[in-house]
Image 1 (cartoon, rainbow, N blue to C red):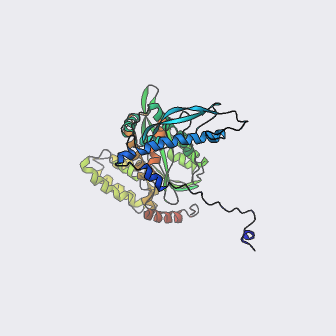
Image 2: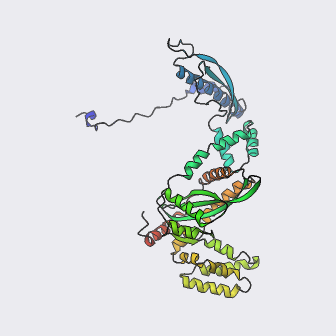
Image 3: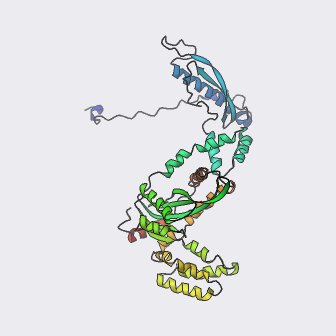
Amino acid sequence: MTDDKKKKKGSISPKPPKERPRIRPELLDELLGDYQSPEDLIGADGLLKQLTTALVSRAMEAELSHHLGYEPGEAPVPSQTNRRNGAGRKTVRTDQGPIEVRVPRDRDGTFEPQIIPKHQRHFDGFDDKIVSMYARGMSTREIRAHLAEVYGVDVSPDLISRATDAVIDELKAWQSRALERLYPVVYLDALVVKIRDQSSVKNQAVYLVVGVSMEGDKEVLGMWVQQTEGAKFWLAILEELKQRGVEDILVLCADGLRGLPQAVEAAFPRTVFQTCIVHMIRSSTRYVSWNDRKSVCRDLRAVYNAATAEEAERALDAVDAKWGRRYPMVAKVWRDRWAEVIPFLTFPTEIRRAVYTTNAIEALNRMLRKTLKTRGHMPTEQAALKLLYLAIRNAMKTWGHQDRRTWGQARLQFAILFEDRFHS
């Protein structure tokens, strides 16, 4: 039996990948014949800029030949009524600086260049630089100055706005993307952003939800803007997460958000709501003098490191007996939210480390605040979300993983404690 007969019926042999034509060494020698310094290659009138100009112009000419069906100098087929109709000039921004390219035209006006479409004044890759600088918190004025200094290109504020607006569709898709079925830990925290509202600038809270996946990877599940908190708002967020595929959350960790515990109970009744221990420490020591703060924090350690709720309550009584007369708010803050603290005390050490604090989300917030710091206020809510999304996308390159060893131990404990819900 031949090899062809051995093949399964209907199978198609994959085509070998098309090899890119290699640049002949002789051509490189010719191009670099007068090369003496880097300026000859990458300078204002260097070889790279000249090559970009020539190649882009030649590519558009080839596109027109394909559109018309005949090459320059050839006679068109008799039925072909459309013809070449000269060419225009267009200045285009590139990584090597501005270049002037030749744009061929046709009589019917049906030719649409692909390499640099009509009305586009930049070569691919230039917008990415604008977006990258914008995501790092550079203002429009700073971006314009940087492009003028490095590339010799003067861009308008409108162009920068259009370049960054191109990510709005990406933002919408990201905000509605499908999520995983189960998140062992979800953190929720707020970031205050100054946003213009008609004639005044107001502080508005952007709420971020960060989930830790089964593999220990952190991802921002979404962000929402709301001026006031409340159970209705939180319930809408949690219901949106359910619509996007989240069926279960084992532990949701947040701090002092009014109405959130009730919303969690309504949307995910089996989820353990845990207040952030670090936020509790900060709240209870807010009015403690700097000289005493370290000692108070050291004594509070016995509360959240206790083995049981009963032991923690005795430790809190001891803190109150020692510091209550001078700082009555220390113990009161903990007692007022004791129901949200004690779930933490039922967990083994490995899980306690995983849910001890919303620092996982606060680390991201620090990056976002750094981006917002130079911007003053945002003109609209959409502009704020656009900037935050770009900053999140940029931050995810270096942020997004739990400590693998710690998470591996916590995952095992989750699997034991939530064996009917935790599926690897």
